[in-house]
Length: 122
Image 1 (cartoon, helix red, strand yellow):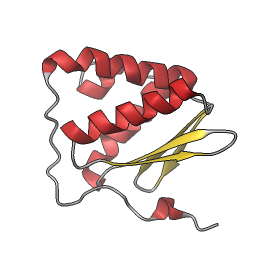
Image 2 (cartoon, helix red, strand yellow):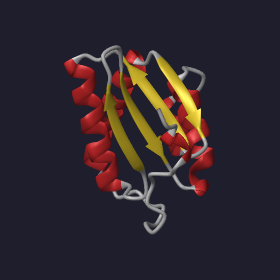
Image 3 (cartoon, rainbow, N blue to C red):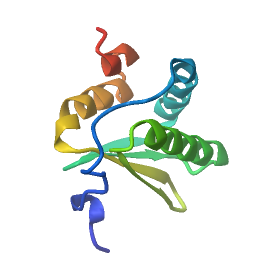
Image 4 (spheres, rainbow, N blue to C red):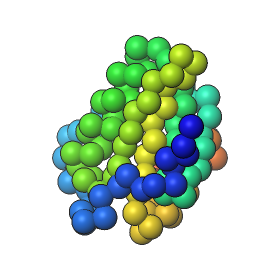
């Protein structure tokens, strides 16, 4: 099997900007929190992370929903959903300028940082 995590899937032509509506943030955070609670592993890659969860329908739906909404408001991200018998995984890639955000994201997902760290709050 070829390791495709070395090939970036983000869109380098899109500006690094988020257009999520304020009214949608709370729901988006709720989905991300459910993903965090279900995580079985987080793998850092050269361009982002791979999140692995048990392959339940709820987890598949949450990952698919999260990636779709996130791509709509942050077109620069790259997402790839992969279902396997023992896990469902979401590959989440970003351009080099998102490295600090990715580090904060991993800190949040591992339970070491509050959700506010993703938005510039302590």
